[in-house]
Image 1 (cartoon, rainbow, N blue to C red):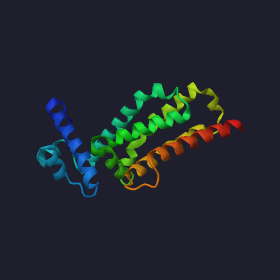
Image 2: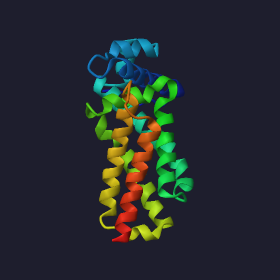
Image 3: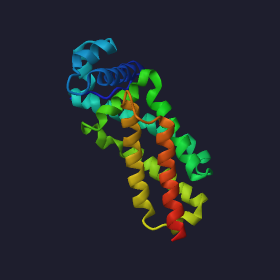
Image 4: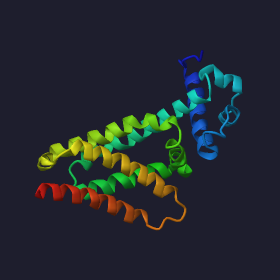
Amino acid sequence: MARVPRQNRSKATVDAIIQAALMVLAKEGPNAATTRQIADLAGIGVGSLYEYFDNKEAIFEAAAKRFVDDTVAMIQPLAPRLVRMEIRDLIHELLYNFRDFLEKNDQLYLRCARHAFTIDMAVYQEPINRVLMDLFMQYLLYHPELTKLKNIPAAIYCYINGSVYTVVKHLSEENSIISFEELVTALADMLHSYTTTELVK
């Protein structure tokens, strides 16, 4: 059974393994990635790797959690400013920050996110959905007129999941027929149109 790291040196080793796993996953994909590749990149032996993780799946689970935790940490500080914006500006600001986050470190998280929709890593994205749902719920507090909308939680849920997938897919395309600016504008206009149309009703 894998042991829990308690000393700084052990924690540093686990951190190196997780970072290496993200890099191998981004380059090789989940099926081709091996524990040998991860251990080599982390600068440790395979035996040392198994001191902390039972198998490759456990390493990927930790890598997925790292991705999710970092995404949440990117979104949360934006909330106080975003909730005071007009809905179009909120979407622009949020999605551009999401793009910049995904493209950091030679697109490390973007390349990992491409695989997240094809393996069980996707099930770990619930904290991301939750922090985005919380953001939009806070937004309603600052814009109480929107609370009159029917089925607003369901609409926000669909919008969040659809937008995240669409952004990752767009950034993964080498020759997209539209620019990122056009994509963000369309997504912002869709939400703005929904809110204004429903309010008129």
